[in-house]
Image 1: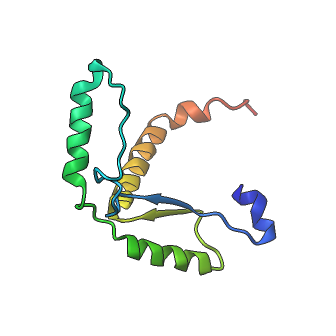
Image 2: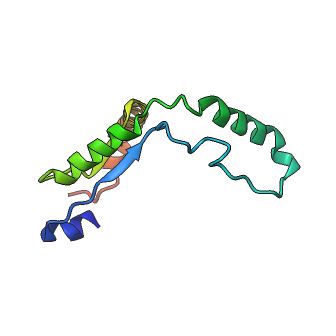
Length: 117
């Protein structure tokens, strides 16, 4: 989509946010289905406890994210991807690192799949 819109001066930015301190994890915001499967009772309890523990502790400041979004919207050439917050940056750094190791490990096999000249 970004490549299709760029000739028209329209840019696409994918925002990849970490956790931001909103009401998303509060009991007032979250809704869980009423039909429960017993096989998931333990995992469900863990997830719900995690939500309660993290609620109000998220490192991201929504007001600062809004300011960043306004800034990006005003940029002549905004990034295609924007990692919002330190948690997002750490997660992406870790992912890129592991991908690099994996691709480097299999590089020769990968390169060997071309037709021979």
